[in-house]
Length: 261
Image 1 (spheres, helix red, strand yellow):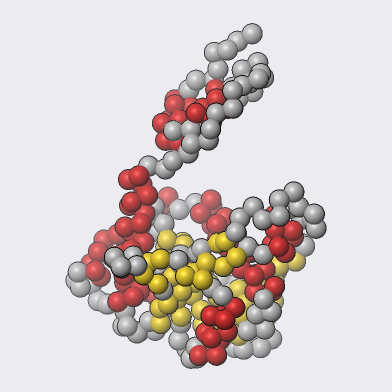
Image 2: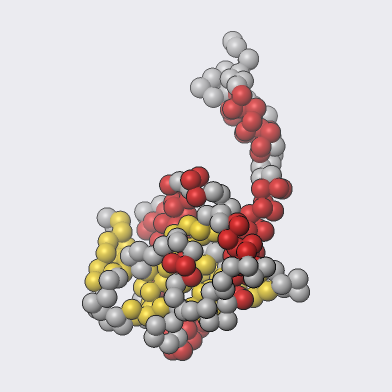
């Protein structure tokens, strides 16, 4: 019986990156049942590099600062005593207020607004059963940026409809506010891949069910396009911060300005 394990460079790099002894045991014993006979269960200890986390938060701060300092943009957020953006809540009351007060041809940006995971999302999307093994494996989702603006029937925009067959697109039947989702990533543009967009799809699906369960689907819809990932344009946002690049001075889409959507 061999206890050598599958020790490779990847196993070593993964272990150094995660500091997870449990994952190390699993990787060493991959496809080797002898290795995993009665293994000691080790506590899970996964960590991302502190430097990586800090770089990501620093870049988010630059992007948020550009949005907030542009007075022409309608940006909603909360901040702490150090002016760091903190979590807000996308409640039914807040969305109803936006619906009643948002002007045509203007865009509202919601920064780090949380909305709850609904039972219908868990049942219909995650487990596809009315009796899931876990009632609520996650309590909330916090997209970096939600973009909202009114759309009329006949415009170049459809709404997303979730069915048992997946995502469908439907022409708008009435004037409603479309919601688009943007995720900020400190990765270089060439490093953005499909695993980043899986998060967007996850946000879209869960937000759709949140609107449905709160009877907000007559006022809001998920847009068929204009979602995206904002990769690292670090130099651009640093120039905006020190006022060496023109400030955003119109209500045109911030992400069209940044070349993202």
